[in-house]
Length: 316
Ligand code: MN
Ligand code: MN
Image 1 (cartoon, rainbow, N blue to C red):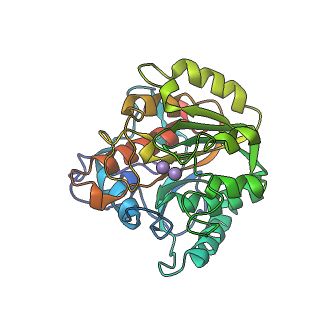
Image 2 (spheres, rainbow, N blue to C red; image 1 turned 90 degrees about the horizontal axis):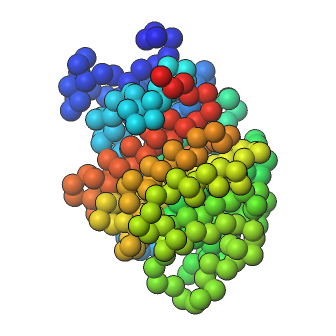
């Protein structure tokens, strides 16, 4: 191996604090031509309801990803042995206009998906997942979904708006972008407005795992069942970093206590291996609230773990 596929720039070729600030120090290109997988940033935060700052998320994730080495010691995945991967930069959103940005993002993903390339997205607030899913569903039809989050993001509207970071999965279901029997929402918690807050999801047929079902335990058995439920069609992975406890991931806009551990996050992603994953995103990293960089570092690692469970990855 070595020359056939792009490789991350190694730490012995250039110190990890130097060199290009691309995801995992991979080569960059401007489109998805000849790629199996692309990392792509969406620097949007005008869909966020509380703290902002996710416009800096993609840049911070790329910076922290400079520490990542190409082989997964835990799972033995060697994604760069068999997949052509590059960083294709950021989508040029219009930071003064959310609706225009949604259209810009959808068009950008239509272009990415014109090639047989799977996008792994560096967010950005969670609003970006709606236009991404529109493009994904246009190509693949309704998809299964693994949605990790403290919040179910199924509000009908926020401040009178139909599109915001807390409405996206209701819109996605209404638009037929999801295969509701193959949707998992995991990590939901916190204070709500009413006992029925998560019921709309369950009425659609989504499987909703509130955080109390995750406390004090390994999620490996749970994911064995999830894999059986979600098999049989394409699956999209949407990971809101606030699904993880703010002790591990404080740099986010709407933190909720009592969340998933970093280890459980790894179990969820690794437990998706074998599914027909067609893309994924890691959203809601807000660097202004992340003084140590740990949240962005975690986000970078989780994106690498998503890469490691894509179809076609070799294990050695
Ligand atoms: Mn969310
Ligand atoms: Mn959230």
